[in-house]
Amino acid sequence: MSNPNPLDPQEPLVDADQAIIDRVLAGEQGAFSILVARYSDPLYRHAVGMTGSPDDAADILQNSFIKAYQHLGEVRGRFDAWVFRIVANGCKDWLKNIRRTHLSYEEDDQPSGYETPEEELDRGELRGDLDGALAALPASLREAFVMKHVEGRSYEEMADLLGTSVGALKMRVHRAREALQKLLEDRYL
Amino acid sequence: MLDNLEPRDQGHAEPAAQRPQSELAPLTDREVPLAEHRTPEAIHAWLDGESVAEEQLRAAGKDYEFWQKVQSETQQRRRMQTPTYVTAQIMKAITKD
Image (cartoon, rainbow over all chains, first blue to last red; front, side):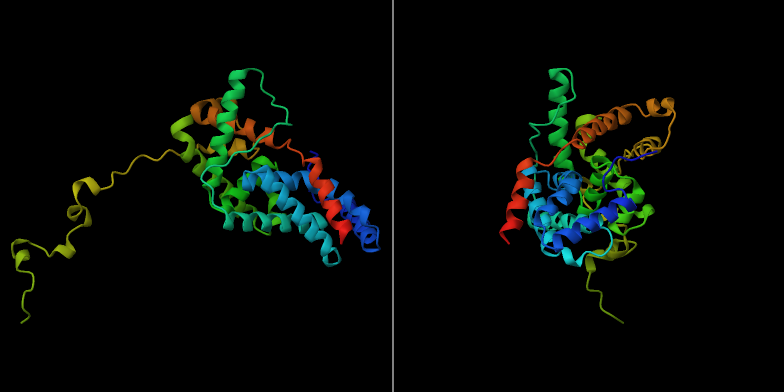
């Protein structure tokens, strides 16, 4: 089965990334925009999932890509995994510095996908409640849940990016689900 | 022979420190274990992308309904895209260097 996720390990893409990195390092700064366009969406989703804030996610993404650009000569292996680690660390630093009791985000430009106003209202409530519950999880559980369910990654991909075993990640995702259900059960169950 | 420094305990069969904690704690402070609700394994398997029979999922009742809603929300989030101004700001910042 094909997986459309652009962060899938794909050798041709890794080679293509390296070719772009070589162009940037040779002085063609504009070529860096190809890497930004190729990887920014999944990384942005990760940052929004971790922070619950589109504005903070945008800041983290921006700072991460600037950092990546400044250290581009140090990339060894896959650029996507390397830049993911920069973004993931940026999110963890953000979480260390800011503890919020309630998080929500706007999604004005996104299609709703719901047909009736009632469904839209329910969804709005769940969105806020889910953000609040995610904010209450330890960073490692939150990260695992976001990667699995918001980014739609396979456990193998997650293990590859995080340098952890598939079994450990399954455990984290299961624990995150149990915790989320416990946090939200009074309202939804 | 050691002096008994706790004469009030003389009437008890065992010293206070050896009595079970539940007997010492005020009644109102004692924890009553509640049956903990767990997400059914069939739901975990379904959320992990494994194939699960529809009847097993329906048997999970409200758990299934709850996780269907969460799935719907997370799938909406999966369509989020980076705001265009972010890409522009990144490129502006690096070309300043």
